[in-house]
Length: 532
Image 1 (cartoon, rainbow, N blue to C red):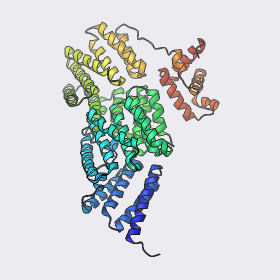
Image 2: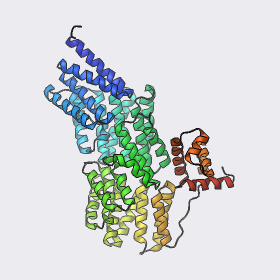
Image 3: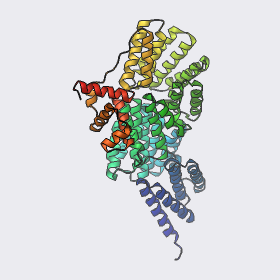
Image 4: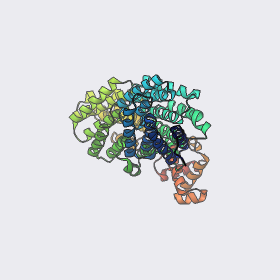
């Protein structure tokens, strides 16, 4: 067979690029890699340096974010950079700037700069796909930095472009959606997340038969994340487990995020050992730092929490939202270690973040941190003032975890100063913990109330709660009432034990109970009263 001409080779490479794109959208990632590697060789052979750099960039993104090969991904991106240096100015430089998914880049300031450079290139060459992705990535970077209004305006602009159907490049569509969903997750914006997940399903996933599955998985991870933030644990678990399902299509990076969120759920339910098992393979990931630090604090290992937090903060440059959460935990850990002045320094840094941004939760976390330091320093007046401000601010954020912590810290600060005020704050903490299924704060507030000579209120699940269970969950609850094991329930219902385990977890969360025995008692009580 005679060798192909340059035009034929160029056409073959273009076909391979397109075939790789189709395979990528269909979640056949190894096949996409094979097509793109063939395209890269062809473009190099005909001297199309810019085209080869574009494909090398695709391979870098694929390895780093999709296949879970970060070292190989970095190698391809470095190769693309060298090719671009030789190629000179071209639109492919903009694609290289956004080579890593926005949600995988720990430096929000660097991401913003990359997005700005990519946007300038996109406008110069009239590339709508690159322009849309650059606007979305810049919006995500700004949200991470606490510039919510400006960031979400850019993201909504990108969503509007998606809604017109103008973008033909499936990779540009998918990565733009990634930035949209990641911003909702980072900001804990439940309303936007719910709307945007629905829009992405209607505009992108449904017309393509649910493809790419990795985007569907990202929808579930992001939705699960914001539901965790809002304390809607049962719904969050359902979304996260859907993303982790064998056929869910989650990439390596998405599985890390989903696993961390699942560990967060387990810790909220008081199941620390299960949370630790989930975190064990991902402890080195910055996304795991906050949950891992909370786990160490729950086990009274504040020094280890400090190490975890400081290591993660070195990697999260410019990310105000995650830094604020970590700084709040750092203050708590340093106070527990007896390092009051070090904790004060961390609280001061957190206040600086609050003053630079526009996020109430960061301001509330700063007040909570200042209150903790004041308590440690023995300044009762300053402690009560700061903690009162924290309660007021955090109650408006729809984030039950920091809200209940603020109530508890205030109650403990008031314990010897004003027992009646302490009781009111402890009861408020107990109410939030009961309502949202936060086990450790519930137990801590109950213990504080007992010290104050008051019996903690108990929340008896009502008939309405039980009636809110699905038909399958009712069947599982009946098995718990009988005292059946998961294997016995699975056999009776023709399910796998793993599926029954998931149902049991959701039943416990919806009933607001901690153990199978408590759930069985609820079922027995409802049966005795004829309510179920």
